[in-house]
Length: 130
Image (cartoon, rainbow, N blue to C red):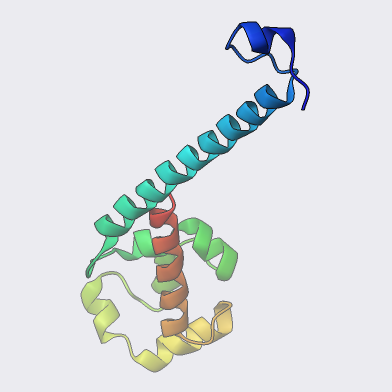
């Protein structure tokens, strides 16, 4: 290996000799590991906060960005308004076949369950990795 005069006489990094170059690489690797460790800790905290059953409103589960990407409607309200859904009770009273037909004809999905599963997965991904 190559050693420089400053390495022999003084301990600070010189950036020239083989020994100091190795120290710089190790420092960079450790900093990267620290960042990874912080990120994993953040994901763990987010996962703990998402644990268990959750009540999520349709507005949150189906944000406008989801609706415009996967449906012909700009938001969940307009998607459901065509079916005369204005509140929870009218949604409960909606015949399942009408909802399924709308999903099949106006979305990327094969069923309402498929649409909800995809939206739920995106909801958890967004909150887990935020």
